[in-house]
Length: 142
Image (tube, rainbow, N blue to C red; front, side, top):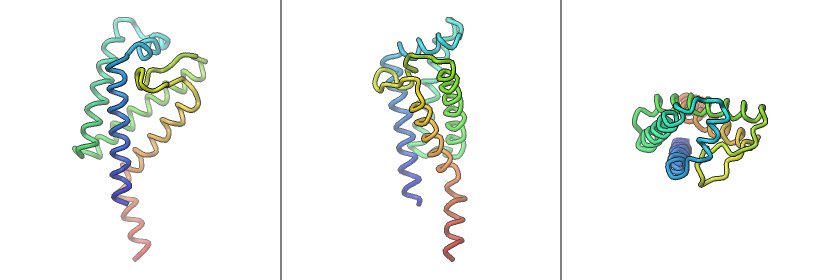
């Protein structure tokens, strides 16, 4: 069980790194997506830098294992916000790319993107509650 949780941590950390690098190298789709959300032009740059910073800090903390519980909670909050924004964009009928991974990975606003985020959120919740899950499984086998 512990190995599976560690693998999930590595996967989530790598997702954050790929997202960071993709947006850092190609921010056009992401900036266009922000513009469709009616965010002020003067805020694009700050939101872009904030999200990049948060993603790389969370990735490093998850991969190295620094304050894992707090980091995972913050990651859940971040991905919940990302998912809600994707749902909003999907419901409103936005037909562009979200730029979630920059230009590296095609990230259309679709039900598939929403399910991808829900899958990532489920991994984050499994990581968060690993201790309780491991304890309850061990208790059943005693």
